[in-house]
Length: 289
Image (cartoon, rainbow, N blue to C red; front, side, top):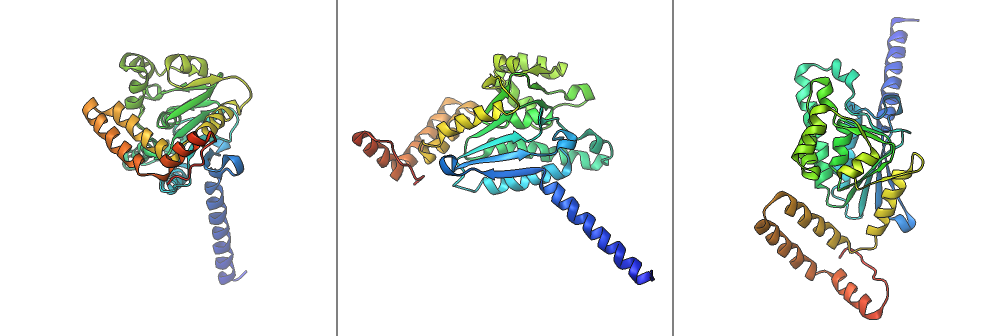
């Protein structure tokens, strides 16, 4: 082959590798918008089977991209975060990738993990984590960023960072104490203990533990999402705001937020539809207006 031919061949191969890499990384997060009776439910599916959904650069890039899109989508009524990998919700940080990461990149990368957990917590719609298997380190921290969590009874969870001479860097050390109290959170984090779904439910880390196959937690999450769908969309979103405010601030601030949110509800068409449906003894049809 001539020098030019070899150069063109090399460029073609490089382009092919780049396309395949892009396609592979884009498939690490699959977004499903359910239809029919489930219209309004959006599902983020983690799909990195070779690494049990470990949080690498490509996976995080995709999660941030999709989170930014969905946060401004009024048609999204409930968001479910699940795994397509049997027995693994998310195994935490990609330690193989982390070992090769320059020190200067570690801080910004961890900040990105924290940023995604914060994006989940700040989503305007209710968010649910369906934990089907191992949810360790950052994987559990992402679940803690959701409004609700349902886990398979045999799932394995833990903020295990101290085992690697680290500490939770994606908000776990602030969110877990809010759920179960400081003393229990310290016990779990400082020991790096791993616990199953049943124990997680007993401690209050998850809403409930469910028995069944690998998809049991997702099915339970879907059931709850379906209960939310018929409710007034504006009311659901504003109720979440009031609850989050009550947890984070004092009663005076929470009361002001409740008053402001209620004032917004009064002017909605949905409120009038609810009153009319009650009078006519029929199911209301809410449009989020």
